[in-house]
Length: 179
Image (cartoon, rainbow, N blue to C red; front, side, top):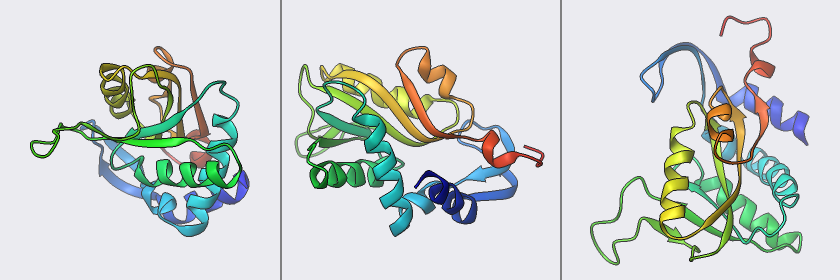
């Protein structure tokens, strides 16, 4: 499964050129992992592989992440957790609190004392997943672990605060390329 997911990531998510990242830095490559997480086989594989890792973490009750990168991953993992008999609830963290309705920043299943893991498609600086983590902790959630499909360098920053696992490191995709 992991090798096939790697092939799909290379085929539909990895681009070479001149890109400006969300951090403002320039890069000669870009990983648009949403192209993989919104691909039928890509989401199936990523969800299964992430769930396999998540189930190694004792006590997990829910999975979530920052919208929009984590949206398909959270949904896929929640579905696969039900199919495989280890049901997990899901939640999504908004970048900003809603200004209408109930004014929520987190949609879905989160409550004080709930043990959760966070998901992200690509970790570049770690800023997005750490922002989601602050929102979860503000609601009383307990973060057990953070997971990503791809670590392009920010995983160490995340790992300073939480246990962190990525399915892939960018170096696996840049061998023989100028990154």
